[in-house]
Image (cartoon, rainbow, N blue to C red; front, side, top):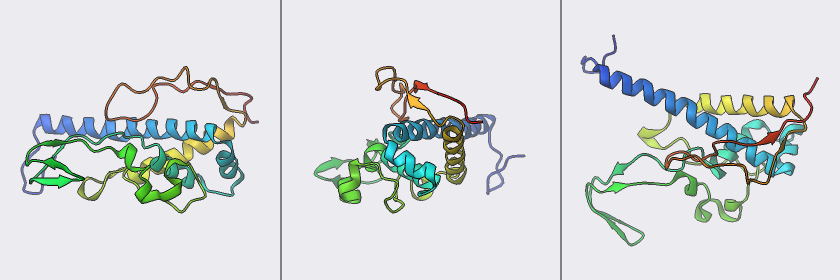
Length: 193
């Protein structure tokens, strides 16, 4: 039995929506995070070398990827609950708002000189990749762990892994919500013993 706090049962529609949300939120976004992490580490070999050597933990690479190249581009629509003005733009009560997680991670007011730089040596960043407040992702600890394990295992298994091209073969996701690539062409190289 699936019941809410007030004792009411979820309808079949509500239950299916919840299962779909958990599948998408818990799978697609983690795949995006792993893809973005692999791509950024392959394009920043000095950062990859620090993580591989143990000078920096894989968790630092994951957190910096979450900040620098969030697996979510925009959060689903929210609606203004009152009239308000943001940076000279007036929002009326009830108007749709689409916030961008991807740009928040590169805000120079928040991150200063490193805003546009991927740096696993920087202090762990605060970021919005898992949302905020009541909308904070309940799967955040699992997503972090999955990304750390996946990236460490990938680069340990294939120490000569490189990008197959300079980005010409990569295609972005066809969605306003996700921020990643549909594919990441790589050359695996030799497999570790």
